[in-house]
Length: 353
Image (cartoon, one colour):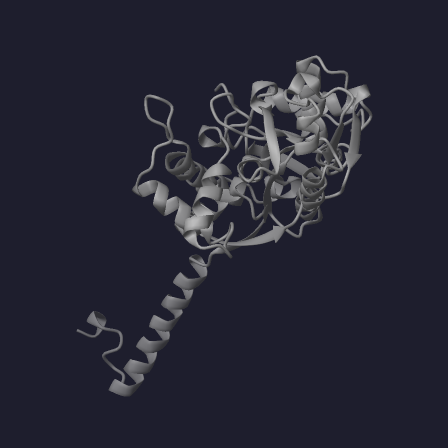
């Protein structure tokens, strides 16, 4: 009988004490085993970051055992720098010459896609100031001889206008490119007529045009369908925390799927569909984007800014390689930056597969 219960020979108080210690140790063990892995995500408060917001708010990161914190930046380059420096684990941002230079040094790995200019969806718009439009700048092929606002030399704006001009038969050497350091400066210069033209995302372009502050004369997608930005992490994470990267990617892809279903789904006529899913996603994104605006003002802006993201966040690898070469040919990216060394398709299959 003594073998039936090893506590049978001790007093009730002692028995409760031993059981309490055992139970406490068991709970502690479970808590340690289930402790969430902390990750920091670098992002901009743009609609383009929506899959991250969705994954966090709908618990997709938590379901993967990840305790995700999002840190916000005001420009693309600091996002890449934060990942390279180890201050953040993951990020999404537009590709620039500066990004490719940093990635080429071995600090970053591009593992998936962010926005993509696609012919079927409105993306970035090409704008003319009111003064320039009235003077004859009414179409993209007339950009020659006009000034153009961009944030910095080597930026994504630089890449877009370079390719748009080439496809439209415009000699970019005849254009005056004005680096104004920030998007607000670009907008102010266009509205005041200090520059003739610029390219900007739709949630800014459409309100400017609707308010009569500028004219949309074309869309980048009609000239340069391209991979605008990517999802990336540090080389160290890929090498030392591969399981964490895999968990992050699964959650991100769920966020992408919800984003596409809520904000990109169209009917047979190509018209965007409004559904309960749409309202749910708008509510989530509104917590991060245009949060200071009431829903009735914020939701149309978010809808206008919902640019295309490929299914499952698949990266257009060949296009990224073409971008690197474009920057290299013009001296904005080091000649030894090799995209094969910093593009890793082992987490998400590339576009076309």
